Amino acid sequence: MKNLVLNNISKSFGQTNVLSDISLEINQGEFFSIVGPSGCGKTTLLRIIAGLESADTGKIFIGGADSTDLPPQKRNVGIVFQNYALFPNMTVFENVAYGLSVKKTEKNIIHKKVRDVLEKVQMEHKHDKNISTLSGGEQQRVSLARVIVTEPDLILFDEPLSNLDYSLRLETRNELKRLQREAGITSVYVTHDQTEALALSDRIAVLNKGIIQQTGIPDDIYYNPENKFVADFIGHANLFGSQLCSELFQIEIDSDETLAVLPEELIPTDKSGNTSCKIIDVQFTGFSMEYSILFKDKIIRSLLPSKSLNNRFGIGEEIGLKIVSEKIRKVK
Image (cartoon, rainbow, N blue to C red; front, side):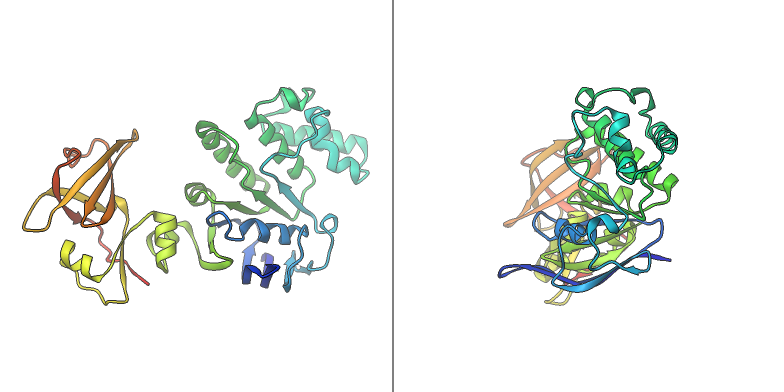
């Protein structure tokens, strides 16, 4: 069952075209991410779904009902904001209960629902604490609980983890996915973080300059990009034109094609023949070793497990390069 359908959504601000003919169908209970660089239109699209902005053209259907002209309060959509948007003068319980209180829900029902959802997000023990005493991760959990407790048809996430430090982002990301699965609420997640989108999503739409570049499951988006933008943005792939392909790998492609090779698919080797590359930087990141390699005027990235036997090269060394992928990935 389709829980959210967007038909031909377009939006401009003055002479600037922000969204162009966006059409998406998102299934009931699906975790769907919209990912793209800053300024690509993803937050504007989220605001249009929520009813905080109006589209110039197109239709929005939520739960099968035409919601295009409905005000935000009548769409039964919950929003988890980047800045949490919690009331600092209220306790955790009061913040989570706020939406139910506005709906004039009976007090005994409010009490039970709030306690239940606080237990799910592991914040029940802090129900009487003031928001200002909580850490960023705890505030994020309260923000999510406040949305879940109202049982919306759809939850919209506007880069909710961007204010957290790295370890807390990982912890909260896992918690977010668990809660979404348990609640079974259709979720649309907006982020510029490719890793976050790949880890969380059932499906992903890649957006650039207001146009959807590709939609698919994470594996497909990563390993089978449909164009150069997706290959570069999602997988940080190395892009080689026909001449470089021939010189470096003895692979022939058409002049209008580009070979996309993921960093983990490129292995530095001992120099062989007349073609040589030079290592210009090596970075140890824990699990992996990242090589920056110069060939002519092109910088090439190679990413290997830090304990790999191939990690024996240093800055300034001349090397060869080998593709280890089973797939020759051509994009345009």
